[in-house]
Image 1 (cartoon, rainbow, N blue to C red):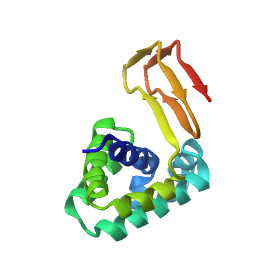
Image 2 (cartoon, one colour; image 1 turned 180 degrees about the horizontal axis):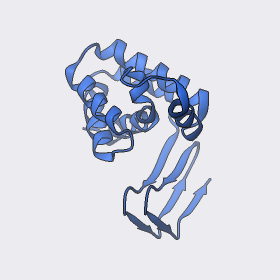
Image 3 (cartoon, rainbow, N blue to C red; image 1 turned 135 degrees about the horizontal axis):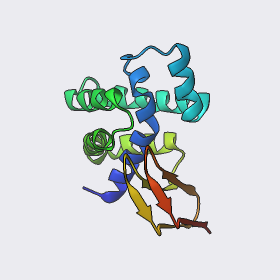
Image 4 (cartoon, rainbow, N blue to C red; image 1 turned 90 degrees about the vertical axis):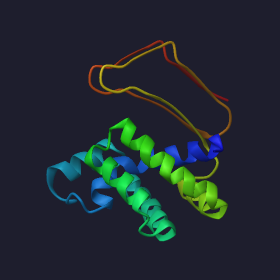
Length: 157
């Protein structure tokens, strides 16, 4: 499978993952937990974008049990990278089969901007990571729980 398609699918999953309980209506978009999710993940703008992207995915793939199942797995633990990888792979298969669908989702993401990430989870360790970005795009570094990140350099040209 094309690595560009996989990167697009991964960017989509990274955006929608925190909101999957609400997109799938597994959780209720009310109360303190919803407010915390919005505050941590970029607010109303991120929620609106995630909702638009999910609606486009649902309109294109319908009730595909693989997509729905992978999304349900993500909704159970939105920060679980293995669950996100599962959804990324399932989504990438659809994007690969339908270039127009891929272009529509890419447009909703903001175009052909590059995405560079260094992700750590649980007791991970990242040291001496470098991100160099030419043109427009996003660079991010995420750590959770007991993770340690040292010596990270980011540059944009």
